[in-house]
Image (tube, rainbow over all chains, first blue to last red; front, side, top):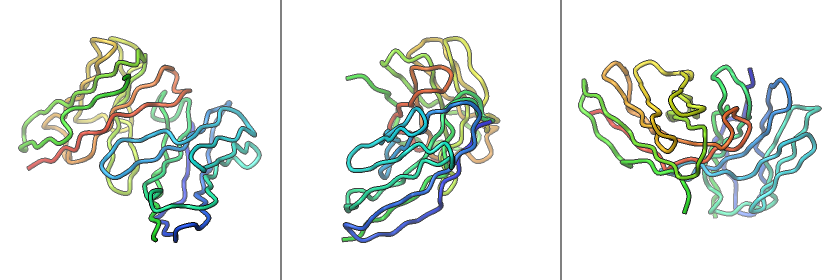
Amino acid sequence: GNSVTQMEGPVTLSEEAFLTINCTYTATGYPSLFWYVQYPGEGLQLLLKATKADDKGSNKGFEATYRKETTSFHLEKGSVQVSDSAVYFCALSGLSNSGYALNFGKGTSLLVTP
Amino acid sequence: DGGITQSPKYLFRKEGQNVTLSCEQNLNHDAMYWYRQDPGQGLRLIYYSQIVNDFQKGDIAEGYSVSREKKESFPLTVTSAQKNPTAFYLCASSIDSQGNTEAFFGQGTRLTVV
């Protein structure tokens, strides 16, 4: 079944620093890939997505490119802000060992300091 | 506005009691999901439903039960058989029952056993 591996945090950056959060996946077929963000005490919000190889998802300055050759979907942002502090989850669609549901990484906590 | 509503936001339960968490969506989505979130463990799938009157176990279904009598509603019951129920519970829905599209999340219910 499909699965996703995400770099562990926490990640601490100064404001305006460059952000990379690594995500790699294992999948059969052609899954869609997603990044979600979770602010403290809240549910998950979709940040961006890509549905096929070489697609680039982007939103709010964040980007991720669906790389089939390296089975990766790394999240990047050129200049982080304090308000970006949150937990970020990489997710994969399709059939996993759990069933027909999005399969999530364990999340990466990001703290941006002024 | 369309969305997913979970209630209550906070819930306290005595040991040995069953408790039901509510999840309602007005997005006309076929699929609905329940995830459990614990610190450092990401999201784990409890149950999912691809269509009304049908549901499937996820990774950690033991001690939980669900029903899907209406398309809009997918309540989760945490039974006394669940050994460690204190956690953050997230409900989600998606338009695609094969897990190929993004999921939309509610704001979560934090359950504490006292």
